[in-house]
Image (cartoon, rainbow, N blue to C red):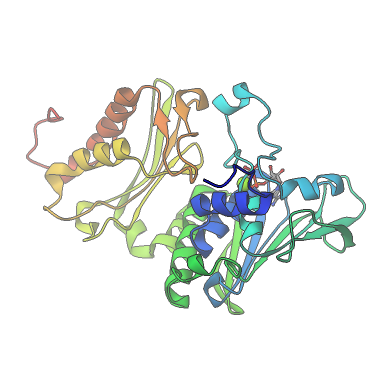
Length: 343
Ligand code: ADP
Ligand code: MG
């Protein structure tokens, strides 16, 4: 047996990157979440060659202090939580302090930022070098730009798993759409190879929100859905549920947000399926864009590194609330039914 040695930081980051950085779309997810956490009101995303050549996210958020720039690229370095208490009620999308370090270890990354109170922007680059970047002055308005080039250039085994430009961009566009649905108040612009793909203005009114949903899910979804908004014992559920006639053969128009975080959750999926059970044909999937608002203390988001999953303290109650709210909303779709069926 060889002797035990500590991994060098770069290799440790590359191993960690295996968990969160699978493809360009996972990078975009992390970068956008950082922009949203920074309070951005607008994000501009530029992508070249499906994201393999270039991913650039520019925001107008709070920015990063000059002295914090190298730290932002270090593993387990975060400004979002400080102790276990914070972790228990985390309200930001990120908190693990791993994303930028991971991405930097498998790409050529440049981070440029101008902090709120600063009179000057600064920049760090980790062009495949080791992880102690030099900070240099730069020009940038308030906010941050992260530029990721040549993803997986130094990890050929991972690069091999990338699909065609079209497929990778498809995944990436889906991530942007999901996040755009979770934050109506933020403007999103997405360009691929210089061509505008998505241009969403902030949506403050109900009508504007409706328009955003239409541009992301298609006008037909909005036309053929019911809007709901229901509150009970500290839980609120609102959004759009597609009419049974607007069901799909795949579960690909289903968005569920808990406190501004898009999730995929078995309990949620089950509650929705139950509510639609007697109005959908076998093999058809419901369509929905739903927002659940709960006290952050009753939901645990620290379950999985990609944070797709959450755990509700009282799953039973959440399930009942979702089921009964949706069941009632769909009541008119089921003329000959006699009230909520037992599960
Ligand atoms: P996490 O988001 O889990 O804290 P990241 O590695 O994604 O970890 O980011 C590390 C830190 O860098 C963040 O905690 C934040 O302070 C800073 N940061 C990253 N991106 C931005 C951004 N777009 N605007 C402002 N600060 C940022
Ligand atoms: Mg983050």
